[in-house]
Image (cartoon, rainbow, N blue to C red):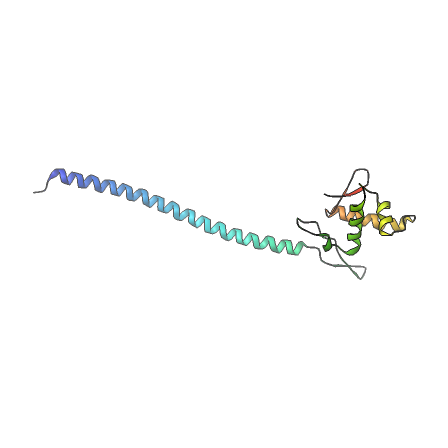
Length: 151
């Protein structure tokens, strides 16, 4: 004959184990769901990183054609970008602005780089280059029209 107290203990333990099994099954399902979400996030991150790299590569200025001549477009300044990525005449302009004691007018830059500043028609292309350097983040233009380096 079976001991009723022992049967009751076995039944109680079986119920505890079944409850624990249910809890563990729920935890396992949650862990697997989170792992799957992480795998999806990783794939999305890889895809987005690749797309961003392609976009950055395609957004870089390339030499263009103007009036049948090849011209070098001025790249936007990016962190870590050096001035040697600019065409030589733009490097000279930045150097002239940098070596000035403070903010400078286009006329002062022209004197340093060798532009005939007495002729307005020769000064305007230089002013255009200065503005282009401002637009691309290489220089800064003050409200009074003077130019300075960004740093």
